[in-house]
Length: 209
Image 1 (cartoon, rainbow, N blue to C red):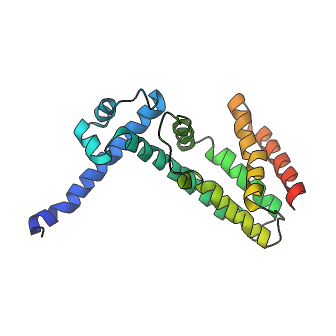
Image 2: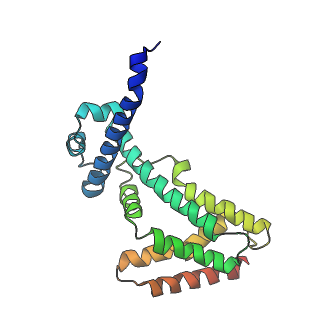
Image 3: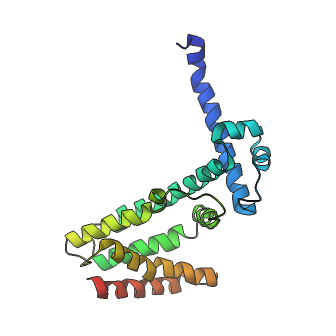
C-alpha cells in the first residue's frame, strides 16, 4: 500500500513524466521527418529532447515503438480533422452535391496544406522500412466515410451496391486526384483545385445518384 507521501507526489510525477514523453515525441517527430527512420538514432532523439537515452527507453521501449507513437499521434490529428469535416459537411439535411463538394473542398484546402498532414504523409511514406500502424488505425478515415456513404444510401441520396467501393471511387475522383496534381505541380491554385473537385463530384454522382 502506498504511503501518503508517495500518493501526494504522484500527480507531480505524472505531470513530469507526461512532459518528458511529449518532449520525446516532439523530438522524434522532427528527426523522423527530416532524417528518416533509418538515419535517426535514439541518441539523437534523447539529445534533442533534453533527456537521457534511458528515459527514452523507459517511456517507449525501442525505436520502433517510438516511431509508432509519433505516427499514431499524426494519424490521430488527421482522423480528428476528417471526423469534424464529415460531421459538419456531410449532413443529412444538405443537398448531396453541396455536401460532397463541401467535404472534398474542406479536406483538400483545409487539411492537405497543414503541417500536421505533411508530417503524417512524410512519416507514412517511410514504410516498409519504418513500422506501420495497425490496419484498423490506418483505415479509420475511410471507415468513417464509408459509414456516412452507407447512411446516404439508406436515405436514398445515393444508390451504391457497395458503400465502401463508392467511397473509394469518390476519393479517387476528388481528393486523391488533387493530391496527385499538387504533388506534381506545387503552383496549382485554389480555382483549379475547385474545378477538379467539382468535376469529380459530378462524375461520381452520375454513377451513384
